[in-house]
Image 1 (cartoon, helix red, strand yellow):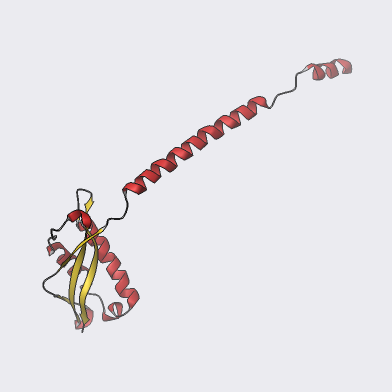
Image 2 (cartoon, helix red, strand yellow; image 1 turned 60 degrees about the horizontal axis):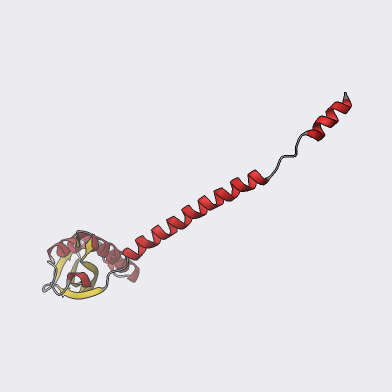
Length: 152
């Protein structure tokens, strides 16, 4: 009886790792192809979304006066840097006036007296201007320049 068990165990063919290797190789090919496809698809999107080129600068004719916190005020002059896509035609500045007034109203002189504070607020203003001046997925404004900035 013990002899029968030994011969049965010896007679069973050894399992081959060949099938396992084929499955692993196939999985690697599929995953590698998917990864490469995703890479090229994302690469194509970023090439299309390249940064716009600088165009003309449109300066506001008048400065604006904005009420700050604690009875202070800000006298602000600005210009918008347009993208090259807008050509030589100046954009309408009315929306920019509104964004700047809304953004600076109620700020404290302390916030505006440091480089970090001014930079943070300017980044927020540029983001809002970029969004407001994007028409049919075409960005028209890319930056704001302050031509005067006086607090009192």
